[in-house]
Image (cartoon, rainbow, N blue to C red; front, top):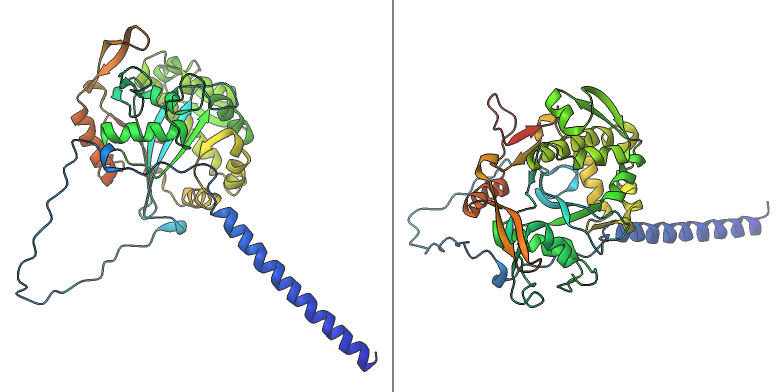
Length: 371
C-alpha cells in the first residue's frame, strides 16, 4: 500500500468515526426524547378554587429569636429505586365501554394506586362507583345540576356527543381526578384508563393468567370451580366484572385478577417487555405515562416483596344503600349513603402511606394481599 493510499484510508476512517459519533449522538437524543414524551395529555393543574373546601392549611410559624446555634443532621433515607420519584400516585380506570374508542363509557373500576419507590410498596385503594359526588364543570350543561355518581364524571369528561362537558385534553381521566380531589382530597400524578376490549387484548398478549379459586364462596362469586384455572382475556374480564355477591365482592374478584396478572407480568418472559407492550396499546388506552416511567414501574415490580402489594377498600360497614332523585335521568337512582368526612380521613392516611399497613398478624377486613 502506498503512502498516498494510507493517507486516503486514514482520512476515510476518520470521516466514518465522525459520522458514527454524530449518528450515535442524535440517536441517543432521539431515544431520550421519545422515552420522556408522555403517551397522552397530562392531568390538569389544580387551582385554588377547586381545592377541597374542607382543607385547612397549617399556620405559618413566626420565627423567634435564635438562642442557640442550629444543628442540622443528615437523614439516612435510602434513594428511590429504579430512577423513579419517591412517591407516585396513579389513577387507574376500567371503562365499561366495549369499543376501541373512549368517547363513551362509565368508570366501571376506579382505583388510586400509591407507588412507593423507596420502601418499595404499592397500595391500591378502591373507590365505589356509586358515590353521589360533586362534579366540577358540569352544572352549566345540566341546568345547575352539579352532583352525579362518581363513575359518571369519567363519562362527562370524555369527547362523546352529548356528554362532553369540558374541553381539557385530559378528558375523562382528568375530570374524574378533579372529582376525587374536591370530594375526598385525592391527588394523583398520572392516569391510565383501559376499556373492556383492550383489557381482554392485554391479558391475551401475555398468554393469559393463572387464577386460583380458594373456596366455595369465591367460586360462587366468580362462576368458577375451586382450584386452579388458566383464563384468557374474555374469561378474566368475566371474573373481574362478576358481582353476583354484591359490589364489594366484585372488588375482591378484581383483586384476584390483578394478583394473577401481577404474577404473569413479573415472569421473566414478560417483565422486560412491559414498556413495549404498553406502548403497543398507545392508541387503545388513555394515559399520560412516558415510556421511561413505564420502565421505572416495570423495574420496581421485580423488586417488590409479595407482602408489599396491598389492596384496600373502605370498610363495608360504613356504607348504606339508599336512593336519590337524579334530575338528569328523571328518576331515583341507587347510591351509597356515607360520611365523606370519614372517607377523607382514610384518604389522608392513604396519601401519607400510613394506611393500609403491610401484612401483620392482625389484618383489617378492608385490606387484602396477594397470596
